[in-house]
Image (cartoon, rainbow, N blue to C red; front, side):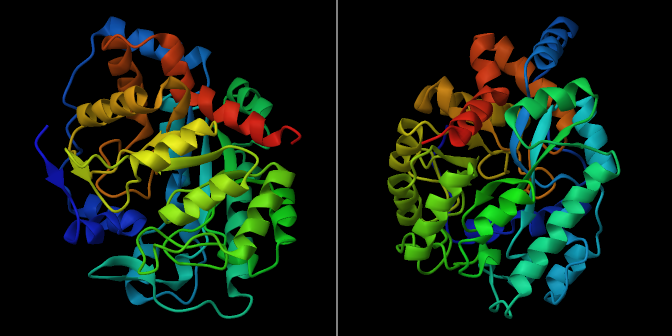
Length: 382
């Protein structure tokens, strides 16, 4: 692989995240290339494995539910909101693609973000109570998907299998960012009672819990309040995601937490081949693995343009982290230039890994087994 260092302008591109993705797909003339083909037998083997073993997306925004009802947006974010939501389509894709469950994420800082030359960043502070009201709106909208019968609510690992047997994709509620806590650690128990089972501590705005990897203060770490949040999450059994966190914040989370911490959607910087501000250091990735967590393979179009290259990246993670510490984190419907742009292509990923000689046991782990293991460890008494 040729040396590729993607910094500066690439931060603006990768930082677009969900908000660049919509514009990209409006302009892109065709889906990304797959870059390989499977025989009927190879595809059948992949589908058989996916029917027998849980397939779980560790991080996604299926149908972009988080934009519904959002207020006080900048004009660019307002335009993004006006592109609408499409949960029914994505859930149909999940069923067709063999996905058992996914983490359906809200976006805690969506209303205060602005989009400039440097990508997404906080453009203002929240008004008092605004972040909590936004959280309540988003979590109600996500819950309504189950009320409509579109998805099955998943509150514990056993619910994943129950949802699959019922013929509906499971929805694991999650929030990207903890801005809504508003310095009230008691709200950690409240969001758990609301059905939230995973939180990403920060997103594109520094908050009272910690600091972001793409911000000016990225050398700063977990705050005192953030340490209280981590301890409360451990007590409740809430999974902790260090994606988007500064290296110091992420390492502080690992130091503070008595349970595994995960990175649901990122990749590892490799100075010899590919670096990017949204990727993490090899040292952090190894520390996450050593504590029992996983790295979610992220199909953002950063340094790759085909699905085959994403399979390469999954293999790289398996080799570097070990098969017990890799998962799938598609960032579906909120990614930048995704090379895995629909769940209907997930069988191709599984089939390609089988074709390349990976043990089915390893594939079962990364498809959903590692996610479930970490979840069970998170729920277990300290």
